[in-house]
Length: 97
Image: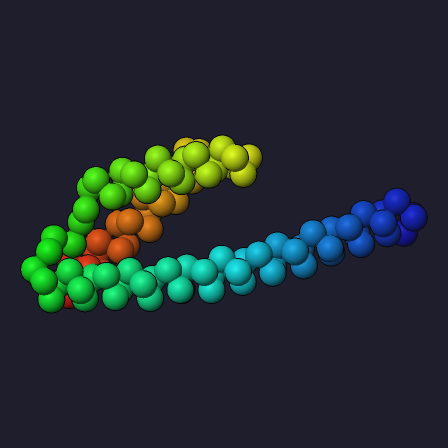
Protein backbone atom coordinates (compact mmCIF):
# COMPACT_ATOMS: atom_id res chain seq x y z
CA UNK A 1 0.00 0.00 0.00
CA UNK A 2 1.17 3.51 -0.74
CA UNK A 3 1.69 6.05 2.03
CA UNK A 4 -1.34 8.01 0.79
CA UNK A 5 -3.59 4.94 0.94
CA UNK A 6 -2.27 4.01 4.38
CA UNK A 7 -2.89 7.55 5.62
CA UNK A 8 -6.39 7.54 4.11
CA UNK A 9 -7.13 4.24 5.85
CA UNK A 10 -6.02 5.73 9.18
CA UNK A 11 -8.16 8.83 8.71
CA UNK A 12 -11.12 6.65 7.68
CA UNK A 13 -10.66 4.55 10.82
CA UNK A 14 -10.67 7.70 12.98
CA UNK A 15 -13.84 9.02 11.31
CA UNK A 16 -15.57 5.68 11.77
CA UNK A 17 -14.59 5.55 15.45
CA UNK A 18 -16.11 9.02 15.92
CA UNK A 19 -19.25 7.97 14.07
CA UNK A 20 -19.55 4.90 16.30
CA UNK A 21 -19.25 7.06 19.44
CA UNK A 22 -21.83 9.51 18.12
CA UNK A 23 -24.21 6.66 17.26
CA UNK A 24 -23.95 5.46 20.86
CA UNK A 25 -24.66 8.98 22.11
CA UNK A 26 -27.72 9.20 19.84
CA UNK A 27 -29.09 5.87 21.04
CA UNK A 28 -28.61 6.67 24.72
CA UNK A 29 -30.02 10.18 24.22
CA UNK A 30 -33.10 8.80 22.47
CA UNK A 31 -33.51 6.26 25.25
CA UNK A 32 -33.43 9.03 27.84
CA UNK A 33 -35.82 11.14 25.80
CA UNK A 34 -38.32 8.30 25.50
CA UNK A 35 -38.18 7.68 29.26
CA UNK A 36 -39.39 11.24 29.75
CA UNK A 37 -42.01 11.06 27.03
CA UNK A 38 -43.36 7.84 28.56
CA UNK A 39 -43.66 9.62 31.90
CA UNK A 40 -45.50 12.45 30.12
CA UNK A 41 -47.81 9.90 28.47
CA UNK A 42 -48.64 8.31 31.82
CA UNK A 43 -49.26 11.72 33.37
CA UNK A 44 -51.53 12.72 30.49
CA UNK A 45 -53.48 9.48 30.81
CA UNK A 46 -53.88 9.92 34.58
CA UNK A 47 -55.32 13.40 34.04
CA UNK A 48 -57.35 12.59 30.92
CA UNK A 49 -55.28 14.86 28.70
CA UNK A 50 -55.00 14.25 24.94
CA UNK A 51 -51.96 12.27 23.77
CA UNK A 52 -51.09 14.94 21.20
CA UNK A 53 -50.31 18.64 21.76
CA UNK A 54 -50.22 20.26 18.28
CA UNK A 55 -49.15 23.68 19.61
CA UNK A 56 -46.14 22.22 21.44
CA UNK A 57 -45.29 20.00 18.47
CA UNK A 58 -45.26 22.99 16.11
CA UNK A 59 -43.07 24.99 18.50
CA UNK A 60 -40.68 22.04 18.80
CA UNK A 61 -40.43 21.69 15.03
CA UNK A 62 -39.69 25.40 14.64
CA UNK A 63 -37.09 25.23 17.43
CA UNK A 64 -35.44 22.17 15.92
CA UNK A 65 -35.30 23.74 12.45
CA UNK A 66 -33.50 26.74 13.99
CA UNK A 67 -31.09 24.47 15.86
CA UNK A 68 -30.46 22.51 12.67
CA UNK A 69 -29.57 25.65 10.73
CA UNK A 70 -27.15 26.73 13.46
CA UNK A 71 -25.62 23.22 13.47
CA UNK A 72 -25.23 23.24 9.68
CA UNK A 73 -27.75 20.38 9.37
CA UNK A 74 -30.47 20.28 6.74
CA UNK A 75 -33.57 21.73 8.49
CA UNK A 76 -35.87 19.50 6.43
CA UNK A 77 -34.01 16.43 7.67
CA UNK A 78 -34.29 17.70 11.25
CA UNK A 79 -38.01 18.36 10.76
CA UNK A 80 -38.57 14.87 9.32
CA UNK A 81 -36.60 13.32 12.17
CA UNK A 82 -38.59 15.17 14.83
CA UNK A 83 -41.88 14.35 13.10
CA UNK A 84 -40.91 10.68 13.22
CA UNK A 85 -40.13 10.93 16.94
CA UNK A 86 -43.38 12.81 17.62
CA UNK A 87 -45.39 10.09 15.84
CA UNK A 88 -43.68 7.44 17.97
CA UNK A 89 -44.31 9.40 21.17
CA UNK A 90 -48.00 9.91 20.33
CA UNK A 91 -48.36 6.18 19.61
CA UNK A 92 -46.83 5.44 23.01
CA UNK A 93 -49.09 7.98 24.69
CA UNK A 94 -52.15 6.37 23.11
CA UNK A 95 -51.17 3.07 24.71
CA UNK A 96 -51.58 4.68 28.14
CA UNK A 97 -55.05 6.07 27.37
